[in-house]
Each structure stands twice: as structure tokens, then as C-alpha cells.
Length: 272
Ligand SMILES: [Zn+2]
Image 1 (cartoon, rainbow, N blue to C red):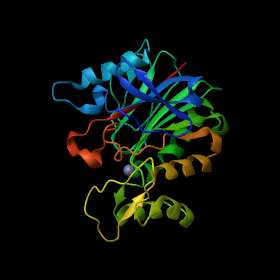
Image 2: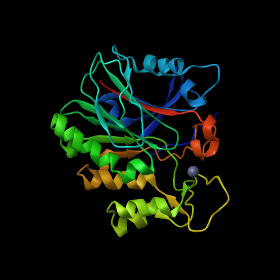
Image 3: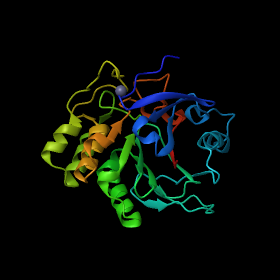
């Protein structure tokens, strides 16, 4: 399989479970990865249980206390992971300060985000589709890190994993309206919503449904960057994998492309 070329800060790493993306500026501080389609999670094969699929990730993350997850609901609820808690609470943002504990989110087109603060020694993982972006998941994660652990935005390093790009992500005007209603500036709206698909040599457009009038192409990567920068994260500490899940059927699952049978990408992180 020829893997697509990620953004400059990322590289592919071969694991026992398959290829994974890592973000080099985070590597010193945290064990982390974004999984690909070759992982059990990425295929949703009928003969695999959810437990089997996540066990594979737990092996690779090698945290003595396993991997903590949340039941994701496209909101902005925050959960601080604690050793010994068995339940899977509801939320879309996970924070951990215990190096024995890995945390993970899953996505199948939404943006998986990983954060590390090497000063306060805290990590976070968050999941945001357009609903989460409109609700301010990136900013909410920063606010929670500051409130719970005294983190400063300028110390944070953030990695945004593969997700559907503006090459392929057609949305209706209701999505754009939701951002306008949540106070986004005209400038940000213009930067995040394009009136036509914006393919690149790395991310070709895939026509996922017949074109409809009044549609927009949503750029979740730009949306992420703007929210983080507005909240004080330094521009050169925000890293995007720059790979569209829909454009690369061989490498990534995509809900838009594959529907209900789509597998998932996991974004997982643990303090080094
Ligand atoms: Zn695409």
C-alpha cells in the first residue's frame, strides 16, 4: 500500500497493527498516534468485537492502566481521566495527567485532536465534527486544561489527525448558519466555508453525492487552527496531518464515503 504524504510535522510509523501517523514535535513529550484503515478499528470487520479492536490499540499505547475512552456525543463535554474508573462517561474531550493512563478518541471524518503540555505534564484528546467545531471544542479543551491544571496556551503542542477536508466535505447552508449563529466573524466564515471543493495534489476530491445548490465545502482544519490561535496557542505549535479521510480509501475509513460500515480512526496519547 502506498501511504499518502502527510503534513511536514507528521510521519508514518509501522506498528504491529499497521501504519500509524505520529506528529514529530509531540514525540518527545508523549507516546501518541493516529491509526489507519489497516488497524482492526479501521475496518469494522464483522468477526471482530469492539473489545478486540480497542485491545490492539491498548497494546500499542503500552500504558500500564490501559486506554480510557468516552462515549462521544458530538458535544463539548470534558472528562478528566482518573486511574481505576471503569465506566465510560459521556463527553468529547478527555484530559489525563497520569503517565500510566492513555486516553483516546475515535473519528470517521471528524477531526481527532491531541494536546500535550510539557510544562504541566498534561495531555488531552478531543473529537470535533462540524457540531463540535461550532460548539468550540478546541477552545473548550484549552479552557479545561487551564482550569483543571493551570496550563498556559503558549506551552501547548497540538496535533490534528486525518479528517475529511474541504476537498470532499460538502455541507448544507444550515452548517454555515450554525457557525454564524455562534458568533463567528465574517472573515472566519469566509476562510472555513468554500463555495466549491478545494482539492490539492495530495487530497483529490471524491464526489460523494450529486451536487446540490446552496452547498458549501467545510474546512475543519482551518477552523481548528483559527480556534486554537484565537485562544493563544502559538501558530508553529499547531500541526495538521493535512490528509483527507474521504480522499484516501486505502488509508482511512470515512463515514461520508463508506456509510454505516465505515471503520474508525483512533487518536491516542499518553505522557512519556
Ligand atoms: Zn478529500
